[in-house]
Structures are given as structure tokens and as C-alpha cells.
Amino acid sequence: MEKPRKQKPSLSKAHRVKRWTMGCYRLGVILAALACLWALPRDQRSVDPGTVLAEAKSVFPATVAVGEPSDGFYPLLDEEGNLVGRATSTFPEAAEIQGYSGASELLVIFDTNRVVRGVRFLSSEDTDGHVRKIRNDSDFWEQWTGKPESSLGSNRQPEIVSGATLTSEAMARGVSARFGAEGMDQWFPEPLELANVLKWFPEADRIEDGSAAGSYLISKGGEKLGTVLRSSRMGVSARGFNGISDVIVALEAEEEKVLGIDLLGSRDNEPYVSDVVDEVKYGDGFAGKSVDEVIAEDSEASPSLFSSGASLTNYAVVESVQEMLRRHRAEQERSEGFPWKISLAFAWIALGVFCGLHKGGARLKFRTAYAIVSVVAGITLGWMFSQDQLVGWGRNGFDVGLVLPLLVLTAVALVVPAFTGKNVYCSRICPHGAAQTLAGQLVKKRFALPPKIHAVMVRVPWLTLLVIWVLALLVSGIPLAYFEPFESWSSGFVAFVPAAIFTVGIIASFFLPQAYCHYGCPTGAMLKFLTHAPGRWTKSDSVAGALVGVAAIYSFLQ
Image (cartoon, rainbow, N blue to C red; front, side):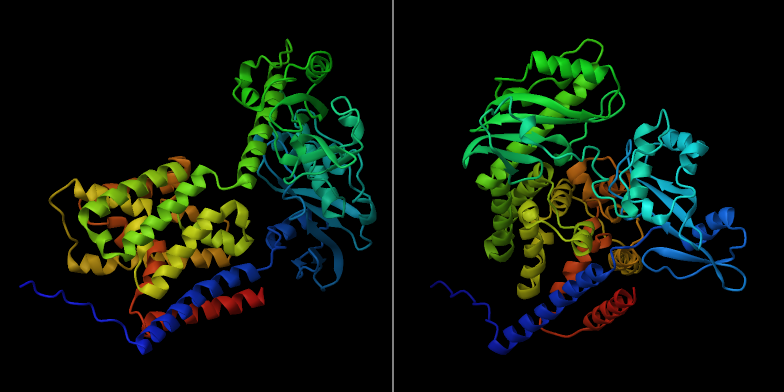
């Protein structure tokens, strides 16, 4: 007679309530930590008061101290505490104004009458050669001297430095933006007008914004005639010989065929721009081609655009057209429904939850098969739950439509262990954990660390987690992705530190079971916090609550 299977005792109602209560508390601790990041002031100017003092002394030698800033202005004080002037950084207003390859920060120094007495360089993400040319050009820095603060926000044509035009103009635009000028982050601030599109849509009587930035609907009497894409509003900035161009692409009403392109403006060199404009005017090679056909062209040898002697400008225009069409097609796919990539991501997550919660998922064959699925998903999708991603959301928020699969993955990683006590993300879904599982199955002989070393190493993930969140609260600027290997799954071995952690962790997992998971992963430590001692208050809960309380006080005082 077959013996009856032993039934796993069900949890009592009181125990379930305790577990759910503790799950809510632990999730609340994490959400409170994210709220602390969100509460930090965003108008933080990167300039150090010591730097302000050093630069102020070059203008006002009597300056001996810098007072507390007000509205971004630092008071400059003499020995007796008297005001001798004020200084302000062009950040954050200039942070979005890109030069050749990055933004630059300047310091504007005023006297007590709010008249400019000097402008000084602070920092730049732009190329060093361009920056050096500008720093050595005295005329560039003197263009603001003697001007009142009230005049600095005017959208005037600034003095620029030959050979560093984009960088120097970006610096000048940054000064204007700091004092109220709008549109300084746009090299081509003029709006799109009907006159710009009438050659394709002669009957058009209206232009209105489309569903995405840089997309415009062209219509007559409410009837759609077509769509126009604009590179400067889509953030597409392919560089030609010495600058970017403002390119527009006209699409028919069904948006499957290109009607033509045009240049509304360009920062590139003459006569290259004129050559391209003339070719587009008298023989637009894009007209009549399908969107897919244009996207598939070789941008360096495009049959749609060829101007002798203007190859770099040609390439930049073609690349801009292709990138706009790619983005527009991707936006169409997203708005029409879930593309296959997102559908596969949801299937992968759902299967991982099932395998993690169902007893059949613990079988070796199922675990191995799903580990292969997770590794493939990690390589093809690149979506992983990480501290860098979580901190970024806490600091800057997110667009649900753009990050929906990653949002679901994060919710599963946090909510399921909090209320079930099972860490399905680490044990099943995480591609890096799955890769370690597969690596471990290739070596029969496994090792274990000596107890004393093990006792030290298991604390490393917790220490790393603490360091990451302290740096996040301090807005340190240190890339938090460097503390984990997960960036390598989405971007490849570009950054050395994540690549090194990735490589060492995978190699170690051949000999130590789940080596990185146990001895290195800060995200795993956070999820262990959610699953430890379900339904019971522990020392970890007290420590976590106290740390978040300190973080809240710090955020409040900022």
C-alpha cells in the first residue's frame, strides 16, 4: 500500500500576518531610502567654494573668504567681512549645452554693483585640445567684462574661438542660459514652419507636435498629410567635417515611404554645406524610397546623397536621416503594442517566478534549462536588477513606458521575496547567477572557503551595499555601475572595472558555488535582507531602519 505523502504544514493566519507585516516594513525601508535620494536638492552646483575663492582672488585680491551661496551666488568677503563681489557657476543651466563632445562650466565674477569683472574656466567634458585653445584666448574671456548682469541673458552672437567654435560657443551659450536665456541648449532654436514643408505638402495648413519629440504631424483641415522628423529636436547630432546639421525628413501619410529631406541649418563648414544643400534641392536621392531601404543603406557610401568633396558632411546627413528613421520606427512599434523583445522579457520573468515558487522548478533538469534561458535573456535583452539602476531611479525618476519590462523585473525581485520568503530573482532569474550555476556544473570537484575566511567574505556584499548608498546620498559622481558586473551584460567589456568583476566572479564560480552571489553581490545582499527570518524582527531590521533614518535626516538638512 502506497504511503500517503507528507503534507507541508500550512502557515497559520497569525504567522502569515507577521510575515506580510515584516515584508511591508522591509520594502518600506528600501522605498524610504529611495525617497531620501529623491528628496536631495537637484540644483546643486558642482563648483567648490575653495575654487571660487582661488578664482575670485585673481579678480579681487582683497577676497579672503567665500560666504554661503544664495540662489547660486557666492558672496566674496574681505578680512573684515565686507562684501567685495559675488560669483556664480553656469551650472546646472549650462549642463545640457553640448560643445564638440561635452558640456563646460564657467565662473562669472561680479563686483558689488553686479557688473561682470571676470569670467573664469572651471571644468569641461569637452575635448582637451579645444578647451586649451579657448583658455589661451584672452579676447574670448574679456567679452563679458564690464557688462551688467541684466544684459547677460540676451541671445546675442558671442565671440568664438577659431578652431574651437562649437566648444567656445557652447561656453558662451552657457553664460546666457545661466542668466535666463531660453533655448541655449538648442543650436537651431528656430521653430519648424509651414514654409519648410510646403514643397512636399503644398496644401498643408497646420503643423502640430507628434507623439514623440522631434516628430511633427502635417495636416489640412484635420486630415493627416504626412509626418516630418527633425534631427535637432530628436537629439540626433551626427557630426560632419566640423559641426552638426539640422536635418528634416518628410514621410508620406502611411509613414512607409520617404518624400525627401532638407537642411534647416548647419554648424558645418562651407562650402561643404552648400554642396549638400544644392544636391538636395536639385536631386533629392532619398525621395521615393521606403523607410527600410534608407535605414539599410551604407551611410558612408550612400547612393541617396553624394556631393564631391563633402564626404564627411554627406555622411553626417545620411547618418542623421537613418537614426531619425530608426527612432521613429522604434516609437511606432512601442506605441502599436509590445514588440517581441518585451513579450519575451515578460515570458522569461513569468517563467522564472513559476520555477522559483513551484516545487518542480527545483529539479536539476529544470534549473539547468532555465539557467540557459536566463543567460540567453541576459545577453540578448541586457535587463538586470542592479544598485546603479535602482539608485538612478531614486535620484531622477523614470519613464514607465520606456522601462516597463525592467520595472516589472525590479518589482518581482523585491516584492516576491518580501512576501514569500523566496528569492526567485537571485536563485532563478538573474543571468549572472545563472551563468555561475552553469559554470559550476562543468567542474565536479568543488571547494569551500575556510570558515574564518568565509566569515569575512560574506560581509563584503553588505559593506559594498552600504558604500554604494553612502556615495549615492553624497552625490559623489563615482559611477555606481563599477561596483557590480551587470553593466557588462548590456554594454560588453567596455568599462574595465565591471568587466574585471564579471570575469573574476565567473572564473571563481567554477570552483566556489555561486562565488560572486555569496561573496560579492550588493544587490543579492539587499534581497537577502527581504528574505531573512520571515515574520521575525531581527537585528538587521533595526540597523536598516536606523541607517535610513540617518539618511532621511541628511536629506532634510541638504
